[in-house]
Amino acid sequence: MMTSRERLMRIFKNEEIDRPALKLWGAGKYKDGDQLLNLLYKPVAELAFEITDLFGGSYSPFDIFYGNNSAGQVEVTVKKTTEPNWVEHHYLYHTPLGDLHSIYRFSTVGEPGMITEYAVKDENDLKKLLSIKYAPIPFKSNHNKALEEMGDRGVVMFGLDHAAYALHRMMGSETMAIMSFDCRELLEEVIASFSKRIYNHAEQAISEGIKAPFSWVGPELFIPPLMSPKDFDDFVFKYDKSLCDLIHSAGGYVWVHCHGKTEKFINRFIEMGVDILNPLEPPPNGDVDMDEVVRKYGQKIGLEGNIEIQDIIQSEPEHLKTLISSCVKAGSKSGRFILCPSAGYMEYPFPDQRYIDNLMLYLNYGYECVTKLCK
Image: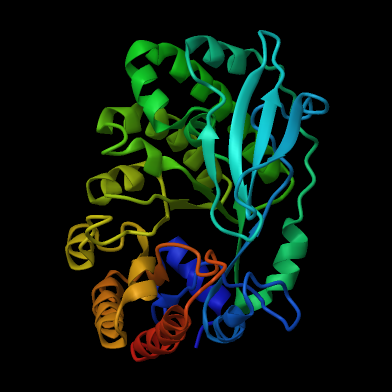
């Protein structure tokens, strides 16, 4: 039987594997005493460490907006709200053309937060963002340490920011959509500038000897219904393709996360050079029929996901088992399949017992399904 590292790397490389992989997003090398969002997650974390194929992360410090010039340029003020478990983080970004202001609503108990006011609200704000003086942060990675800690239990992916996603974080979907008509060339100028910074960062990682899977998130914000297929090509494919080419030319691999209805974009991700695409959501949130995707694309791309986190949260056990077995049966035919939920498992600070039980079911039954296919 292959080690988890061997199995996952063979999926990246499109080489024969002994069986499909099993992943619980967010699971790592858990040891007693590690921090948990809620103690109810402890048996899940322990079992996931024992039986799943692990994904770890590494990085080198990177700030896509200011780089090494961020000192004194961003002011953060924390303000109370009327709700005891929520505070507001007010950000003031200084630029040569004037300040930008945003508000992030932050949970003090671990609930997902949200941006309630975006920094870029109009064309003038976009010009302010573009005016920021940037200098790269000296490269200092934890990759080798992460590799040593992971061992054969999985792979370590070097994380990169995403140019279009970085801009979206500053302006949101509504303003992005409007500006894609009103000042499209300016949008492209900002994304091109950000993309060059990421490319140079990846190039530096490669020059430092990092030969690994590289990972990023963000394309999901540039597919329907938020943006059009042309927007995806102009704001994502155009820039990510050259980054994939750089990584592949150095012997590396590419993992990309893209929520939503991705079925019509899988071929574009293949052409882009993505080696593994996550999370391939089924209807209604997504549109991926795993049987159909495998029939259409075969082994051209690694397939990771196809189990909605909502189904783990809400489903009756027998229904969840049916979803898992069907997913593994279909995905395994590709020879490059990783069973995985659509989101991290420990993102809810107050899980109920059904969710915990279903997570344990996902792990135990998922493991049973993939190991039945062991060659």
